[in-house]
Amino acid sequence: MSETAYSPSHPCRFDQVPRWDGTTDVIVIGFGIAGACAALEASSAGAAVTIFEVAAASGGSSALSGGEIYLGGNGGTPVQQQNGFTDSTEDFYTYLMMAGGPGADAARVRLYADSALAHYHWLVEQGVPFKGTYVAEKVVEPLTDDTLVWSGSEAAWPFCEKAKPAPRGHAAQMKGMGAGKIIMEKLAARVAACNVAVEYNARALALIADAANRVHGVVVRIDGVTRFYRARKGVILCAGGFICNIEMVRRYAPDAERVTQIPVSAGNDDGSGIRMGMSVGAAAVHMDEYMVVKPFFPPECLVKGIFVNVYGQRFINEDAYHGRVARYILRQPEGKAWLLLDNAIFARPTLFPNVEVAAVGDTWAEIENELGLPVGELVHTVDSYNRHAEQGVDPLLHKTAKWLKPLVEAPFAAISYCENDYPAAGFTLGGLATLPTGQVLDPAGGLIPGLYAAGRTTCGLPSWGEGYSSGMSLGDASFFGRQAGIHVAKSAPTDISDK
Image 1 (cartoon, rainbow, N blue to C red):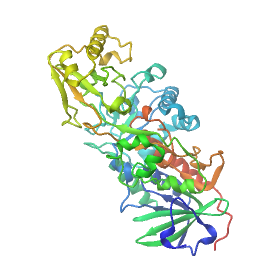
Image 2 (cartoon, one colour):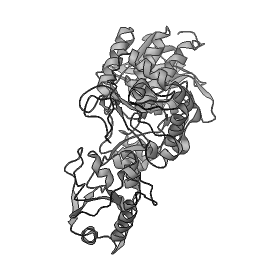
Image 3 (cartoon, rainbow, N blue to C red):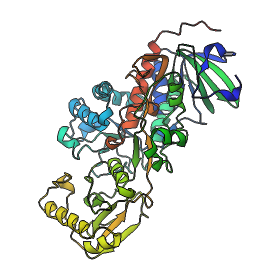
Image 4 (cartoon, rainbow, N blue to C red):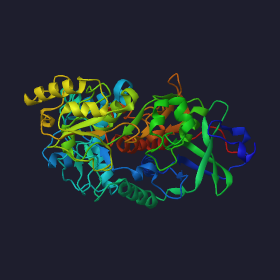
């Protein structure tokens, strides 16, 4: 087979390997948070590990994240308890199951809920810094170096009715946004200290598998040269999602094409890990799901406004997680929605201060007319909302009383969150089906021998865009990356002798 013929969509068969350029126990594809944690655990268990990273440095999309890790349960982490919050494992489990939506993996959620406190301590042992202070305001991620934030819909309907709310976003200590780079710096240092071999600028081209689809290694291109590496125990795919692969997005998650203009990615979420798994018979699940961001706060006063669509009707409780609100906005007719504010709470969103103010008026009828909405509909919506807000209730959409305020102080305004005025960003949530151990499954639920996966290459805890909470991706990737590393290190070597 020529060097240009290797593809993630087709395995290189074991009997076609021309030579072995290297052999190790465990191969990890990708050096983001999932790959780092998988390598650390496999190495700690005594396995020889090699990481192949397509970029010139470690970090991946994890290093560009807000650095929030979703943790709780067992009475609360030290950070939660220090700030007066208790968090039962059952409340944590219930919230995660609700947030996972129709596709929530109960076994995965159960293990994570039971083990999240121990995972917190493990992260601290690796050097991840948590200052331990609490941010009470509603923020996307802390701009200060504080740690504990409300990073989801915990205190919003319908989640708060089933699980006692608690803040669970644990941000690494760093002033300013993007604390994911601190986490990756600490984990990369630990990987180096464990003498894990790392090859950068190394693109995985294809899995190496025998006729029974047992995985034995990987074909990698390093510095323009195609090489063949053997994994005695297994290969762990931690290569990210597929938001940067427009063909995969159109095939599996066509609605997510609306967020491909601003992919939440370091640029290498091309779906290659998922395609490699599928090439040896792996199942891919919830491939249509994606997370979207279109932050409308901070400042948190904007949460007291109300969203309306082209019919002048509300459609979401505005105190929900900003990603959940964004999904509902994208679902509206023509992708159009406006945030209605009165003079008392008017502000521009901090993260998108140039957003268009689509209408200003002294009455809601003027706003309705400027937006070209059906006569009387917006006026009726605001009148009804104000009447109930005065009573501290929202019988239509159950917005929490804390965020209810009649919109009565003129002048009034409508900020545009329409698709053309406020672009959305996002990433995919679907991926390979795995056990909590990281073992990759085929469509019948059988194992793909020698193959593991973690992070966005899999469909993990965050499996439903409407339930996503900040920190779930890093929490899922780090914890289940660890599980994959632990399990593969204990596995028996492949049973085909070296060539």
